[in-house]
Image 1 (cartoon, rainbow, N blue to C red):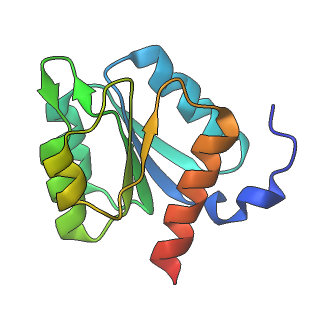
Image 2 (cartoon, rainbow, N blue to C red; image 1 turned 90 degrees about the vertical axis):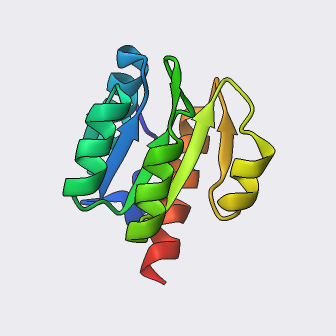
Amino acid sequence: MITSHLQYSALKDANILIVDDEFLIALNLQMLFFDIGARVSIATTLSSAMDVALSDSFRAALLDFRLGRETAEPIAQVLSRRGIPFLFFSAHSIPAPLRTRYPDAPALTKPIGIHSVLSATDELVRSRAA
């Protein structure tokens, strides 16, 4: 599936959190990251994402902004407090106040290409290691 694992070397063995209320999208992303050697936890609801975000250690997280009728803002708050870098990915625009609150969190718009997701996440992991 991926042409070169070397270009995403920071993701090998990295623990990544993927939060998306669409299970098939979360599962596809999980398989994509597994293919390059990352460990992945997925959550499809705000409550399950909060449980995982509070209890596990991650190198980076991908947050779908809209989780049904809720948003990922509480998860972003937890990750930010814990010093875990994250990015937003959504078919909806991220509200300006949230972008201002988390200026280091990239925002990707669905649909997202495979290499865009991997590159952005690789950069997050590298930024945390620096």
